Amino acid sequence: RGGSGALGFLCSVLLTRGLALVAAERDDGEAPLLDPTFGHCAQEALSLMLTGAAVAHLFDGERNLGGGFVLRGIRATPPVGLLSELEALRYVEVGSRLKCPSSPIWVVASQTHYSIL
Image (cartoon, rainbow, N blue to C red):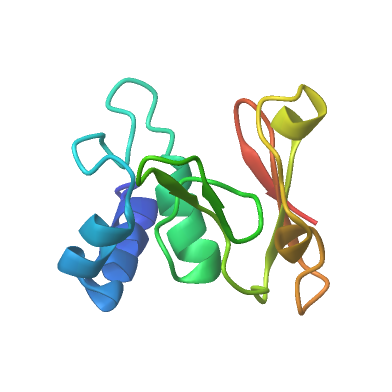
């Protein structure tokens, strides 16, 4: 009733994965996982909940940009997928691993909320 169920779930996921491992997986460990103004979760938090890894990118695998700079994406096919309105706007690329999950369940992300399909 207090409205803190989502925050409790996020804390459970973080502690289950391990704070040190989550910090190592993130691109920017200083950025908040929850937006303090609007309460939106960072992409890393959503990826952690869907795939078990706190990665910031939705494409498949890794992309080496050179100079030791590697962007980490989705490593394996998750049980639950993700579709994003932001991909249609060309802000993100969602890889086939998230588009074709092992179960026919998707989180649909819009600019303001999430739905389940």
